[in-house]
Amino acid sequence: MLINSRLVLIFSGGVDEDGKDIQKTKSFSNIKPTATDQQLTAVVNALTPLQEWTLMKAERTNLHSLV
Image (tube, rainbow, N blue to C red; front, side, top):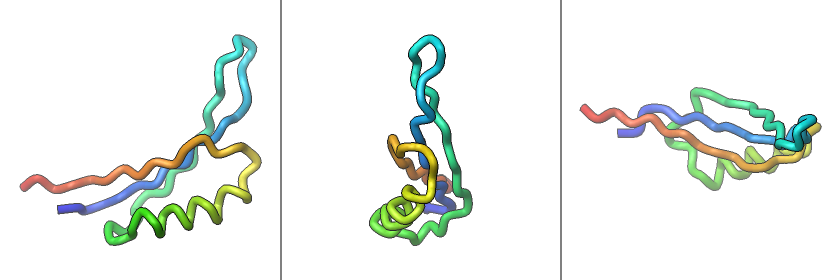
């Protein structure tokens, strides 16, 4: 049974002196387990223009109860 979800936005923060990508993250915990992927995508699309960095990807992490 799905008991909790978390939304993580991963942004490009530029590159360091070695040319490696710098990643910035913003996490949102306690997302309603009943929220659909389409609803979370709408949230991501609404939040992205408000950020100073470029969105690389968005991830949803679900926590399930096994017993």
